[in-house]
Length: 393
Image (cartoon, rainbow, N blue to C red; front, side):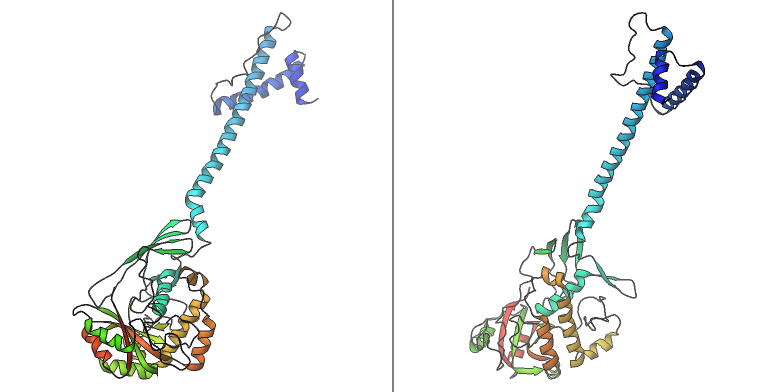
């Protein structure tokens, strides 16, 4: 006999006494559990049904009430259990949206907070620190930076401040911006503006872009404009050399001048492969950062794995500087997300690397931060063929 049949006989009052006692004990057990876990409030619509006529005895009415109470308790338990499950699922979903989803979405985009190196002293280098170091050194004469302050907002969005941590002019210029899912917006767009493509006039038989004329006009116009510079003002000065000069010879000449200037940037000749002026900074600047030294040897000149005296002695080494320059080129080639945020995917890095391997490190010009007197002193040297200046910012 099924349990349903037993209940039916029980309600009809025809269940044998022995089985009736066992069923009532079972009902009493469930009622005791329900009373302990839940209140006694009845669920609307499940009140005991009044007896009709004299066909049902008072005893059967009480049995019916007991059965109805048992059904009420079972339904209450089902409702509570469902409520707990639904509430837990909703709470988990809300917590995931608040705490998990923002970070998960960020995984698909450029992460400036990613740790790419840790020094022996425990200082961490973040992705944007390293990327700024390479990008600004290659593309932005006199604007080298290698530190960023980052605030993550989730969903691939970051607030960014790029401070200037050292300055020879007494001014410290910080710039800020926002990185949104791999797209960089600077609130001062002038910071990442490169020098004009004709800031230098390059003298070479296989280079014909802007040959003989530059951003300041003809050579005579450019030199004449130097007289109009203001005393006490610092300039980003771009000097073109009369002939391509091997790095070792250039650095000897530059050092012999012993003039008060800073942020030396050396322009490396790459033929007509790119209209961008690419170069490097041989002098120590910024803060020590870390990177994958095995893959990119000497990627940064300022290296806490080397003593200051050793680093200073390496500045004149063409071997060291060529390794440094080529490591920066390889790093940019390998870092697709980095070149994306700086919009530099138009360059044939492999072709430039091949050219440097075959032809070495020839310098076509250089840039420094200097006052009028220093600019005039460099310009008077027979090594210089052209000068362009812009107020240093």
